[in-house]
Amino acid sequence: MLRGALRFGLGPGLLGRGLGTHRGGSTLGKAEGSGGCRGSGVSPVSSHVTFRTRGPGPRWEDSGSLGAGDWDGKVSEIKKKIQSILPGGAWSPLCDTSHLPPEHSDVVIVGGGVVGLSVAYWLKRLEKQQGAIRVLVVERDHTYSQASTVLSVGGIRQQFSLPENIQLSLFSVEFLRNINEYLAVVDDPPLDLQFNPSGYLFLASEEGATIMENNVKVQRQEGAKVCLMSPEQLRKKFPWINTEGVALASYGLENEGWFDPWCLLQGLRRKVQSMGVLFCHGEVTRFVSSSNHMETASGEKVTLKRIHEVHVKVDHSQEYQPVECAIVVNAAGAWSGRIAELAGIGRGPPGTLQGTKLPVEPRKRYVYLWHCPQGPGLEAPLVADPSGAYFRREGLGNNYLGGCSPSEEEEPDPGNLEVDHDFFQEKVWPHLARRVPAFEALKVRRAWAGYYDYNTFDQNGVVGPHPLVVNMYFATGFSGHGLQQAPAVGRAVAEVMLEGRFQTINLSPFLFSRFYLGEKAQERCII
Image (cartoon, rainbow, N blue to C red; front, top):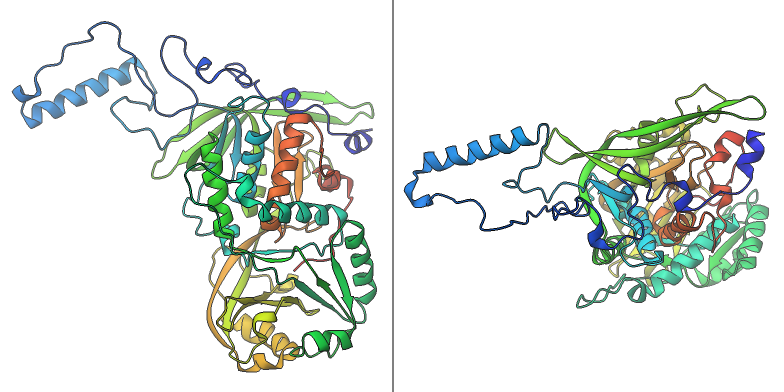
């Protein structure tokens, strides 16, 4: 019975699943000034609190009559009086609280990378009334020094095996093509994503040729422009490739290439701030929720939970700020599994829905940059070898980026972002030099590591609500293709939150319930 219900629709939209129902009452549809404490001038949207003074106000002694020590004593005395009036309160009108999150927000998005920012953007773009939905984005890495977004190679492609992934990337490339129509901000300069339309070139061995043919058939059905190439055609178009061991190749003719991830990140952040989205640099440490116990027709006992409060530990502080909310979006990337655990997801008995974990974990991936004067040159696409190695051109100076995903047995420790240079020498370079003989003479110039939000179940995204924690939504687990699909994923999540269903692209195969049901949405084209 429960399994059947999980396969049946998504249910009510954001109103029905909790928006505007956090403790303290609804904020949806209220005018901007209507929330908060009446007559106090305090708005729960802003962390800047303003006092309105009636009448002439209290008298203050002339500071000129006080010495420095006396003045400090006066300030200390005032602070103590305020704390005695508001016991336990961390707020003071004499302290800057601009770094703190607001006390209330309709939606709290955990994760400020491109996926989380895209969700924020589409929530504000699709809201029925301007300012109706209050959105807070919490990001712990405010420099983005460890963000998957900025450490990626910035590729976008339509060459996937699942129709849903193809559709996501087709919309995302349209979004990127018209970036300044979507993300324009008055008086700010236009965005330049530095898009390189060089395409992806996938190479298949004899064993993988049939799978490639089937993939291309699906891609064409979904509207992607992809061609198949024989080894002879491959040598003619790309004479620098050694076709030994290659039975077939697929090549993206349009809407594929790479771009500047940092530019997209900053463009989204700039835009959502102009739309009224609030930001907080901090870490989510706890959820406060209520529970309802139910029993299904088959006799299985389940507990439905609703999050009412998010605790955020701000930078450079041991204290946390509670934020009352109606909806939480888990867009924490590689760390989204931990956020799910904080919400109690996966803590039930094994084999039950309550015991089903979010199977997303950090996987470290290396990116190497090398120089090769005799390399493929400006005509080089992004090449994906059957061995798992890949590379693409970087700039105009005979530089190239590339790497290779390790086997399960060789997965590196994700506890740090240190680079294993031996991995390039032993696992990457031999495949590159075999495929492109000119790479025998390459010289590595630099390298770095980044994280995949790796879905260990089927390497595909997790999109939509949790069936038991009814007001937590997922946008995570994309296993390396989150950057390129972020614009479309953000729209899909916003649609489900606002309307109760996917409207433009049906992403039902990516719902959380598939982990309990054991129904994989297996993607075969993972780099």
